[in-house]
Structure formats: structure tokens, C-alpha cells
Image (cartoon, rainbow, N blue to C red):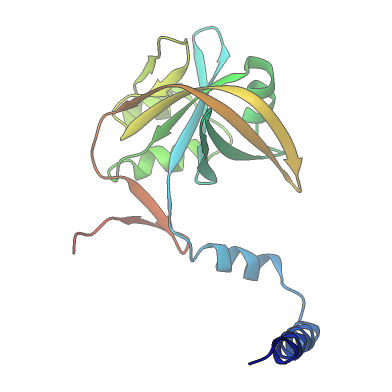
Length: 187
């Protein structure tokens, strides 16, 4: 096949793609959410010191690694989330990767209000990393991070954190897929 034929084929593919896009209807927020729900994620809790000795947390599955050198992660936080001003102020936070048995913990931190009685019922325990960051005890892994950048993107702020410390406790992670909690099944 000659170069002219390849260019002609590329032109036809582009025209077909443009025509199929023009016939498509506008994507709704629900359709977008459903499409993204096809991607299985782990479940984390972001924790920050609200005030001396007081911890606030938020469930997040919009979490990923960014870089190995330097060691960076990111977490996406809704602009309306109560934790966002605390992250801006404190500039340090913890990430706890939840175990498959911690669905109740995930549901608790997904709520906008948190109270001591509910924490007692769930038997939540925290520990402070050497960097002074609160993390959940008994999680698969815990990361201690400092904020190095923030980027507003749509209705969320992307928080980029430099990982200062990580501990692995082990266990199977809690997963979220198609709007439901899931567990890893061995083949």
C-alpha cells in the first residue's frame, strides 16, 4: 500500500468518526457516571487534623499514583466537601486503603457529618504517623502525604500529595464497581 493510499484511508476514518460523533446525542451526567462505574477502584479514606487532636475524614475512590520520582499521588475532592478547606489549611493528610471488611467505615466517611458516637460503634482507631498525620488503624495500607499542588478541575479540586511515608498492614482491599462494594475473588 502506498503513502497516498494510507493518507486517503486516514481521511476516510476521520470522516466516519466525525459523522458518528455528530449523530450521537449529548452525554448525560448519569451516563457519564455509569460509564466510569465500569472501572473498578479501591476505596480509601482521606484523613486530616481538623483541630488539635480532632480528625476529619472523607471516603475517596478518585485516588491514584502519579509519579515514582518524586513519589506523588492524587485525590480528587468535591468543591463542596467539608474536608477541602482543612486540606488547604493543614497541607498534610493521610490516605488509608480500606480492607474488604471495612465497608461500614467507607459508608461512615462518605457522610458529610461525623460524630463520636458513630465512631465508637464502628470501633474506629487512628494513629499518628511520625510526620504528624492521622491515618486509620487496621487498613490495608496507610500513606502520610503533604500537599504539593492543587488544581481546580470542574466541580472538584485535584490534590497532589508528596508521599512522605507508607506502611503496609496487609489484607484484601475493599473495591467499588458499578455503584456497589465488591471483594477480590481468587481464580
